[in-house]
Length: 242
Image (cartoon, rainbow, N blue to C red):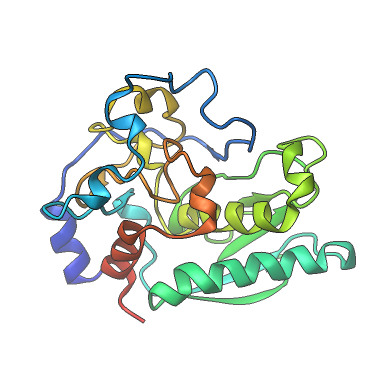
């Protein structure tokens, strides 16, 4: 971690961390039975803090998982011609978000060898997830799992495969660079606390971001595969401006 990142961490809020696989949620009435209609406090205000000129919403991270350099190798455990298009959508989605916003560069994108380091992606018809966060994924077999068919998970995505694949890729690669779920923070407002899942952050750079691609309490599922202003600011803080 470079000096500027260390300074940010030292000045940040500190929360308890608990390890767990980071599961994505399916696209099906995303807030059904979780966020009540009517009076939901801050949970009912998607713009929320992002429109408050006095606050800058950034992300929540597990500080030790930030990669030491912005160049990160990526490989596929089980690439196939059948998934060639979906694999390209994944790569493009990451390029147009995390890479475009920062100095991050994901390299390789070939079939994994036994000894490949970096992020190793397995394609499987199950809930997309990562087994660890950030550099904890380095060389971990099937450390990231992505779904391209949606037969057994989020079947609504069968009618919008490209959009879903891109949105999920951006979210999961957020975990891949060290971001936790935003709603896992100790300062998460109202009913959004009910959506906590996976690892709790130990570092919150600034206030809760209702529009983050990492926030399940964002009424736009995975923020439509787009980074919020806070996501952009966060990745620049950690990995540098492009």
